Image (cartoon, rainbow, N blue to C red; front, side, top):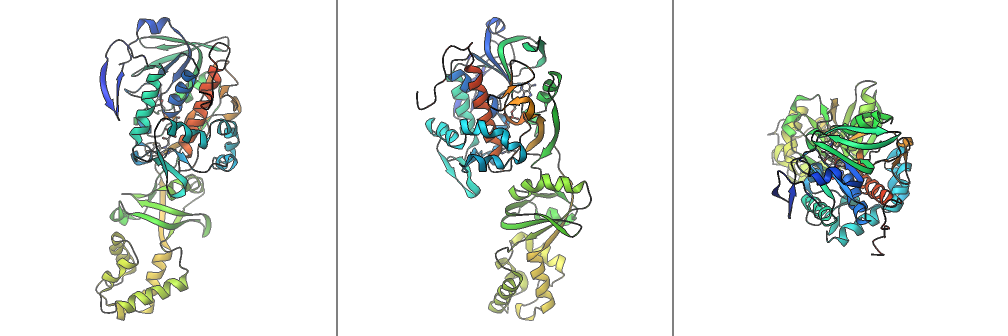
Length: 456
Ligand SMILES: Cc1cc2nc3c(=O)[nH]c(=O)nc-3n(C[C@H](O)[C@H](O)[C@H](O)COP(=O)(O)OP(=O)(O)OC[C@H]3O[C@@H](n4cnc5c(N)ncnc54)[C@H](O)[C@@H]3O)c2cc1C
């Protein structure tokens, strides 16, 4: 990795000492003609840079923030859910809905198995958790981040950070150069991997959509997705931080069930988040257009009403001289108990033996159908990803090359691809980034041929 001449200062990210520029251009960078200039050094851009460089391409990676991959460091609550253990390519692609078909080529070329081989080959051990979620064994996103920084350096990728792109100059349907506020970059090919619009403080502010549109591409309207939901109930803040495991969450509109999921959820200060809620947020957003939406939580999905009643009776009988507030911890998370007692009106000091049938029914209903009313969804600031982006019909799925501009490629979240939680969104970046980087390098202009990892 060549850093720029000015403003160098070493900084430690993860386990790796890495030098970055302050956007000042080295004169040789101005005159060098790269094979590939990549805009956006997130997971997709870094993977593309790495693969192209491994295959012998001269690559420059342009990043507007002070360092690459800021969002990558935040992924999976800083543990980085790298991918998912679903190795059947078609089943994997089905998680992206109708647009998943576009990913098939990229997944067959560099899918879950190849991604894991890549990390393992570079000594990053992984582990599989619930729902097939794959994390680094160290539980540290910064290890994934550090690995990429090290590899792009070892493969002589030129990295330019704090970089402000003013214009992408197009001539005869070919990108001629990128004009920065302090110079210009010329390359045979260009790749836009600027991500979506979610968590804009990480650098993903949707710039790529603007350029793609200016270059003639259609942009499917970007919307926040995998977003936490806001609830109307004012007491929800009392539950902040409470994490629920193995619950079923159902979504209703006009008394009709519209969606139901099982798994983990989390109470926030003003609503709910966690995998189950995030995965349902797209559907909730669609329903909200037509009117109010209610949510019901089943804390005991393994027990039907009859079995739950038996369980409650057993608990009351076993602890009949205890106050109900002290019996409930066997049935509910501690933080939920004051809320439950307030909402049902049950006296917390009431002894187990004197609970009435009506009170038991209220408790049972609370445990099986805890109701909440949705106020709305949070926006791009808190959305995990963006739906929409560069229209897939205008990109060749075999190469990630634009069908509109001759020497332009796309990779990662800037494309109209979004998956559920569980490692599916980073896999888009690994697969499309790898394919785009290799496709560029395989062109005639790049002499050295790409070898598969097994051949190396
Ligand atoms: C809190 C959080 C947790 C997540 N956890 C997971 C997870 O565990 N697993 C998972 O699969 N997915 C997760 N995701 C989603 C995943 O992080 C994204 O899908 C992924 O980062 C997209 O990668 P990308 O390279 O396409 O874009 P980004 O990661 O958004 O990177 C784009 C890069 O381009 C740069 N850029 C933008 N504009 C310009 C410009 N004008 N000039 C130069 N550079 C520019 C940005 O600064 C940024 O560095 C999470 C997302 C969030 C917000």
